[in-house]
Amino acid sequence: MAVFPETRYPTTRLAKVLSSLLALLLFGLATVSTVSGFLLYQILHPPRNVNTINLDVMMGHPTTFDFQVPGGSSHQGWFFPGLRGAPAIVVCHGYLSQRAEVLTLVTALQDHEFNVFLFDFLGHGANSGRTTLGYRETAELRAAVAALAARDDIDPHRFGLWGVDMGGYAVLEVASSDPRVAAFAVDDAYDDPRAMVKLEVQKSGLTTLPYLSRVSDFGFRMLNYQFRDEPPVSTRLVRTAGIPKLFVASEDRPGLAKQTDELFRRAPDPKSTWRQAQSYRDMSDEERKTYESQVVNFFLQSIPPRGGR
Figure 1 (cartoon, rainbow, N blue to C red):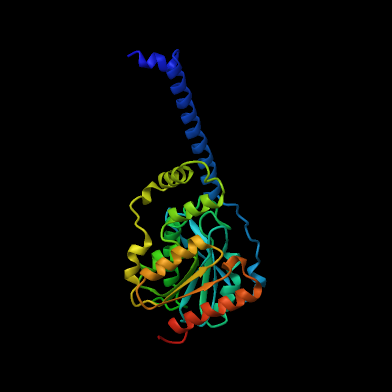
Figure 2: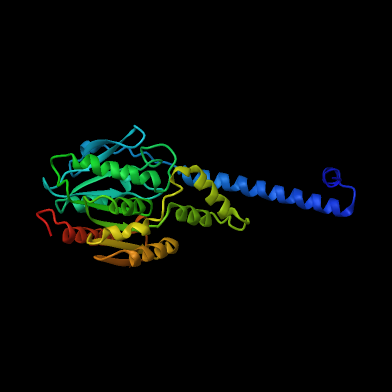
C-alpha cells in the first residue's frame, strides 16, 4: 500500500521518474484532447456565407419552396421550373459550400427542361447548426424528395439526384432506399461521414500529434451516437441495381477520389465514371461548362424530360 503515497509524494529516484512520466502522459492526453476538440468544433461548425440573392431578378423564374425536416424545423429551397410533368433533379451542394455555388449546374439542367430544386444543408448557407457530414443531411434530402413528390407539376415517380462530397453521401443513402430515385450522380463522394472527418483532420496538418485522428474520430462518434449503428453506404449500393448512376472523381482530392473509385467498383450496373483534374468548386468557368454538359447529358439519357427511357 506504500505505492500510492510514493506516487503522490515521490522520494525515490524511480518513483520520481514514474511520476514525471505519468505527468507527461496526462499532459499529452490533455493536449491531444484539447486540440482534437477545437479541431472537431471547427470542422463541424464551418463558416457560413449567407447568400442575399434576390429571386425576383434571377433567370429561370425560381420560387421558394419550404419543406419540413426531422425535428420539426423547416428548410427553404429554390424550385426552378422546367417542363410541367418532367422529372425533378435535386442538386446537393457539398461541405463548406452552399446552394448559391451550384447555380450554374441548375441553369444547365433547367435549360434542358428539367425541374430543379436545391437547398442549404444543416450548418451551411442559410441554415445554422452543426453539420453531421451526412447523417442528418440524408434525412434532409429524403424530406425534400418527399415534399417535392406531393407537387402536381413534376413527375413524382422519377427523381434525379446530384451531390458532391457530403451531398454525394446523402445522395447515395437516399438512392439506396427511395424507389422514386430513377438516376443519380455523385462527385467526390465518400462511404462514411467518419472518413470525411479523417480527411479534414489530415488536412489540418496536426496529425503529428499522436492519436489525434483516433481521438477526433471518437469525439465525432460520441457527438453522433444515435447513428452508431449506421453502416457504410457501400453496403446498401446493391439496392441501386437497375438505376443509372454516375461517379465522378477529382485528381486534386486524392482521398475522396480513392473512395469514389471504390464506391463505383462496388456499385451494380448500370454505372459509369470519369476522372477530372479539378474539383467542381475549383474549376474554371470553361471547365465547369464542360463538366455540367456531361452531367446534363447523363440525366438526359437516363431520365429524359419527355417520357420514359
